[in-house]
Length: 87
Image (cartoon, rainbow, N blue to C red; front, side, top):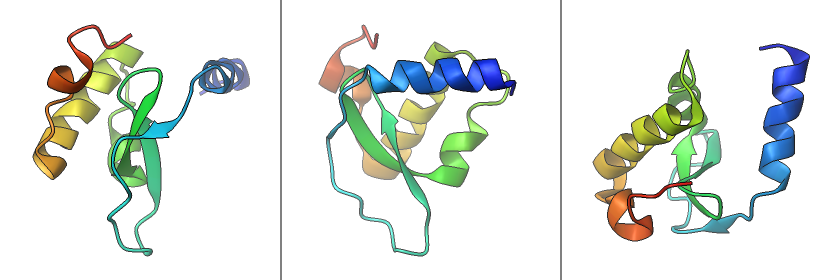
């Protein structure tokens, strides 16, 4: 990732609210990040899993992949929580 891409990514995140939908239930040994399921709500995911969904994807594909993982981990269907319009 270039520095410019990283700077744009951080700038986008500064504009987002961060309201946890559920608490972090992972053990302290697992590094966790809060994944935005939309521009406001977050769900904790292990960092290694979250990063694995970046490779060659745009934001909508990344969110779709993470949302499938969220369904497997938590049984939550993100589209039922935030609707089909994730952005």
